Image (cartoon, rainbow, N blue to C red; front, side, top):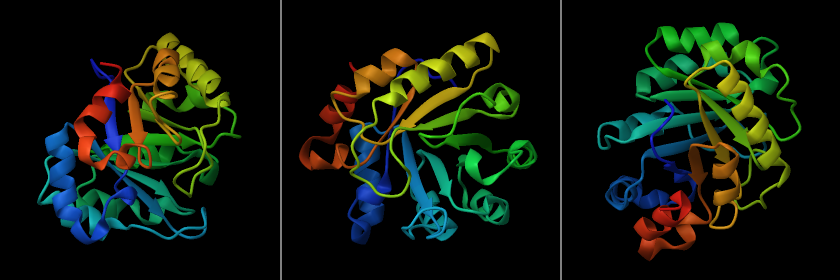
Length: 220
């Protein structure tokens, strides 16, 4: 899953949800690589957002790669529904499972890609144990929950640490970064080893020029 170029994953939490299908089409036409679904349960994080039904509704309309980011307390109760809905990559949080390997294996056995997310204050020391079961690592550069937060610069060192661990393995695990990504922070995380950029508030602050903004984030 390590891409030849930087991939852009727009977060649909920031689109006009009344025109969701049209917005998905517009993002695809502008050059988006993935659609990023912020799925929150109101417990692990305060907001309550999307479930598998939304993924299913868009799956029949879009050929983009769908990433379901499960910010929920009990992902083991929901992964099957997201698999059936058509998510390509399912990511859950390290903080909710003492040993995430069984759930990672379950997702992979169903033919989906697997991801593990780490909050800013969660050490990455145990990451090498889980890498063989992962396709992607999500490094949070803000606390999960609310969009529009300011990028935490400590994430750059965390991405660099993760990149070193992945390269030593070596395994084709991509590194996503989510939170506060803009034209100033994108080059920092790319230089540190990130390969997938999740963008919400910044990307959609340029609604008339999405393609150029994505190109700018990629550093092309």
